[in-house]
Image (tube, rainbow, N blue to C red; front, side, top):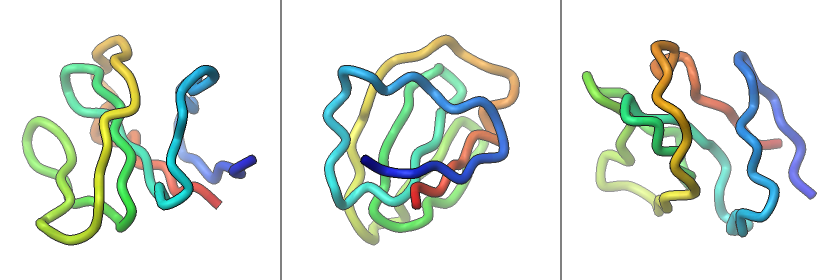
Length: 75
């Protein structure tokens, strides 16, 4: 089981298969939660991997005005 270090409310990922290589998760403006193998960069609508590492869409959540503060490092 992965541990969380977060700055906001953690998403409910029960029932979601999160790959072992995922080290960060973040939410885009549309509510989509993504997993990244390296720390993603932020743009005006979400997060991106900057062509480095792997990424995977984990789930669709509700859109949040706080999406830009959603980056969470998994420990």
